[in-house]
Image: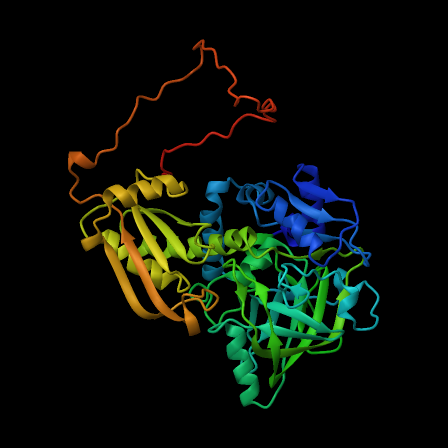
Length: 484
């Protein structure tokens, strides 16, 4: 590896987005309580990230939208949008085969700022949705160490700010951070960790990598090193024995006293519902580091999460299915499935029964899944209408629906109370061996070059004229993606 690329530093990322015309700058004063997220929601899913340069009551800007467009993310990572899952899967596979550990350095940009009073209210932490319980950190990467082994773990949790030096955290069941907290309790110790806000996608992907791909005994921070093309640099905390990302925008040194809990929530979660209020661990913030000219980063719990988590889920499921199920060509985690709960698998059938095998393997590869739909290679898995066509014309409800009762799922999904519920798979493949009645109608591909035609404008009576298009229409292809 040589020097790190632009993905390792959020400031370099912002400059890159600006150069590509992929950054919206909001110069008007914006209130961080509800207004900022409200504006971001109007722009959600667009081809540009958003930088709020004038946040009421604060001197630091706020960035959002880095992950809400796969096209944007592909441009940032110098990859085609369709190639992102395979690229992410390849980076994780490279780390598994030849891990590159982070390196500890004496100094980094995060330590160049002034160390003042610990006051979370001086940070531009937004209140997102109307019923949220308060301002929330939701894009910071937590770096903790196993109290017994010292192995580092990265994760993304939500933190509700409740005081100048106090937050309440939600920890998903089954995560390594929950295991670390239990180990600290057994040893009579506090659990210490850092929260690193304003980092690049390599570290974000490392934190979101499923445990099935990054077991507890591995230092998954090395995944970021693969994306950065150089070892991730860390510095020691100044107040607590924690590790901090050297070029993060903000870093908090924190600790949890096991058994100390307080109400956390509500919060507008990835499901589109509010997570309920419940007693959850209290976080004490002992030190706040702020890089000079820092930019605070936040995420809307919608398309940004669906894309970032979906890419990791797709990569993990695709890697496992390619090893276990002959003919699997592609995997897509749909936005309607919140990027967590619905995987669509494309398969070129080799023999009868393998489509159902793909359903079972997908559930094993990514436990949060609730639904798996398997379709043939002539179906565009990223086109909801095409997938629905396969469901309505190829699914045999008596033979093709698989249900699994009383199984572990994702606790944020309200249909999985206490993380237990029912999962369902749909085998929407044509019967094998193939018969002609399931062949799709097709038209000869032709070019319109040289074809003369008149295309009149259409408008309703009394309607205002249709504004001219700002660019050529996107080409939509029904041709299934073929793997090289």
